[in-house]
Image (cartoon, rainbow, N blue to C red; front, side, top):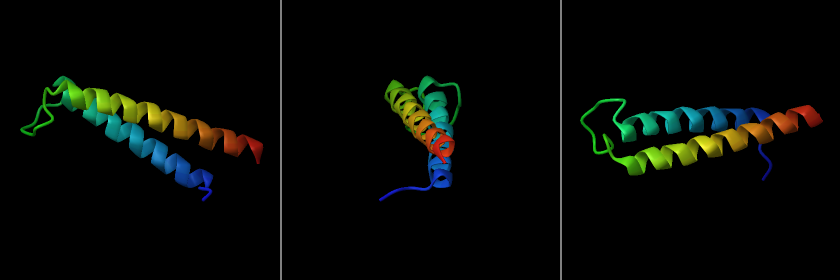
Length: 67
Protein backbone atom coordinates (compact mmCIF):
# COMPACT_ATOMS: atom_id res chain seq x y z
CA UNK A 1 0.00 0.00 0.00
CA UNK A 2 1.41 3.37 -1.02
CA UNK A 3 0.75 6.32 1.29
CA UNK A 4 0.23 9.81 -0.01
CA UNK A 5 2.75 12.50 0.75
CA UNK A 6 0.22 14.32 2.95
CA UNK A 7 -0.40 11.19 5.03
CA UNK A 8 3.34 10.74 5.51
CA UNK A 9 3.67 14.35 6.68
CA UNK A 10 0.88 13.87 9.23
CA UNK A 11 2.46 10.66 10.53
CA UNK A 12 5.88 12.34 10.70
CA UNK A 13 4.66 15.39 12.62
CA UNK A 14 2.59 13.33 15.06
CA UNK A 15 5.48 10.95 15.69
CA UNK A 16 7.90 13.79 16.35
CA UNK A 17 5.53 15.62 18.69
CA UNK A 18 4.54 12.51 20.66
CA UNK A 19 8.17 11.39 20.81
CA UNK A 20 9.24 14.79 22.15
CA UNK A 21 6.57 14.65 24.86
CA UNK A 22 7.68 11.15 25.83
CA UNK A 23 11.29 12.32 26.03
CA UNK A 24 10.19 15.17 28.27
CA UNK A 25 8.22 12.88 30.54
CA UNK A 26 10.92 10.22 30.64
CA UNK A 27 13.60 12.72 31.62
CA UNK A 28 11.34 14.43 34.15
CA UNK A 29 11.19 17.72 32.24
CA UNK A 30 7.40 17.55 31.98
CA UNK A 31 5.99 16.92 35.41
CA UNK A 32 2.85 14.91 35.94
CA UNK A 33 1.55 12.10 38.04
CA UNK A 34 1.81 9.26 35.56
CA UNK A 35 3.95 6.16 35.37
CA UNK A 36 6.14 7.72 32.65
CA UNK A 37 7.55 10.49 34.85
CA UNK A 38 11.27 10.09 35.39
CA UNK A 39 11.38 6.69 33.67
CA UNK A 40 14.32 6.76 31.24
CA UNK A 41 12.83 3.91 29.21
CA UNK A 42 10.17 6.32 27.94
CA UNK A 43 12.82 8.85 26.98
CA UNK A 44 14.55 6.20 24.85
CA UNK A 45 11.26 5.12 23.27
CA UNK A 46 10.47 8.78 22.59
CA UNK A 47 13.84 9.31 20.95
CA UNK A 48 13.23 6.30 18.71
CA UNK A 49 9.83 7.69 17.79
CA UNK A 50 11.36 11.06 16.89
CA UNK A 51 13.92 9.32 14.67
CA UNK A 52 11.11 7.34 13.01
CA UNK A 53 9.16 10.56 12.45
CA UNK A 54 12.19 12.22 10.88
CA UNK A 55 12.66 9.23 8.57
CA UNK A 56 9.01 9.31 7.49
CA UNK A 57 9.26 13.06 6.94
CA UNK A 58 12.34 12.52 4.80
CA UNK A 59 10.46 10.04 2.60
CA UNK A 60 7.60 12.52 2.25
CA UNK A 61 10.05 15.23 1.24
CA UNK A 62 11.73 12.99 -1.32
CA UNK A 63 8.37 11.92 -2.77
CA UNK A 64 7.39 15.57 -3.11
CA UNK A 65 10.62 16.42 -4.96
CA UNK A 66 10.16 13.55 -7.43
CA UNK A 67 6.72 14.69 -8.54
